[in-house]
Image 1 (cartoon, rainbow, N blue to C red):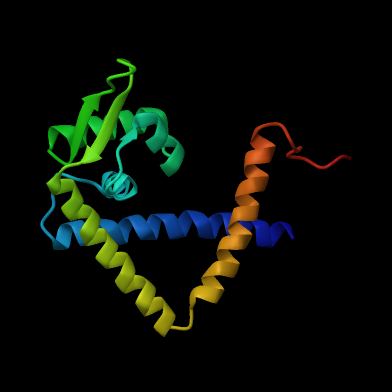
Image 2: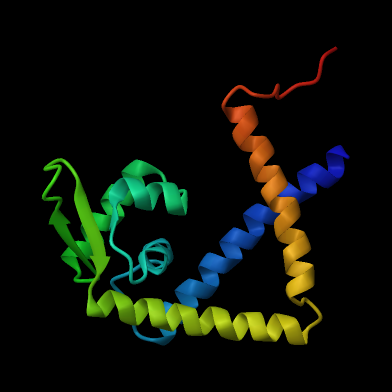
Length: 156
């Protein structure tokens, strides 16, 4: 079990890195030089919604300081629009500009093409659903363990 668990952890890390490389390749292909892959994924997660930085952090599982830095850069480069909340002056709301929405559409098209190619290669929605279920269980365990609900080590 331990070797399978360690293989899963390593595979998750590699898959994330490869996904970011594919996103970066798409940005390069479309001539986008002022945006990195993480920022593009933040835009994709915002999409047509309006979110606070806190909601974005919760939704995308980004580290708060990294989100703040990336949001600042995307506002400066015209990908995100930011405005203060009328109800809470400490909070700001974010939404994609037209430039940011163009990135979202580009990534949506990329991901749709990848999903179609996967299905053609024998990885259909049933396989992905089973994989997602297992990964959600691992995620739930990690969240529970992190919050003190479960021990990281077994009793001796």
